[in-house]
Image 1 (cartoon, rainbow, N blue to C red):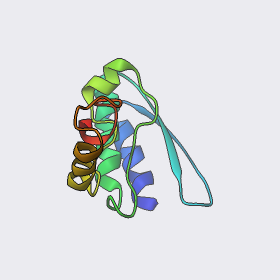
Image 2 (image 1 turned 180 degrees about the vertical axis):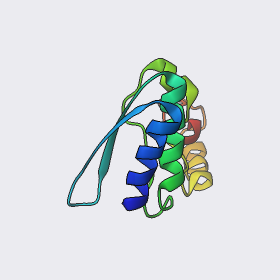
Image 3 (image 1 turned 180 degrees about the horizontal axis):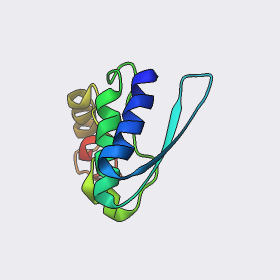
Image 4 (image 1 turned 135 degrees about the vertical axis):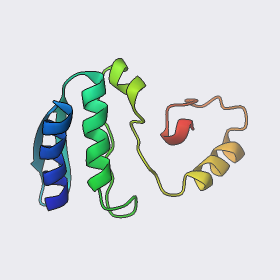
Length: 106
């Protein structure tokens, strides 16, 4: 948690984005990042660099403008992506069910 807090402050200084944090007792940290799409993408990248690992904690963008979504991968690194793609191919070979909306463009 301390690394994420430090990364948030560093992101504010380096990218000029505003970062407001709040957390829960369950270990969930919510960050509100404001700024230009480029500054927001840079700040999210800095936070992802400080996240422990895909198994222990990740940074996922829950809400963003179209410009921000175009500037970054909202899901970030995800473990098991190859397995998820294989399941998608098996269950939806025609890619009819919500194509491209899930992690990795699944």
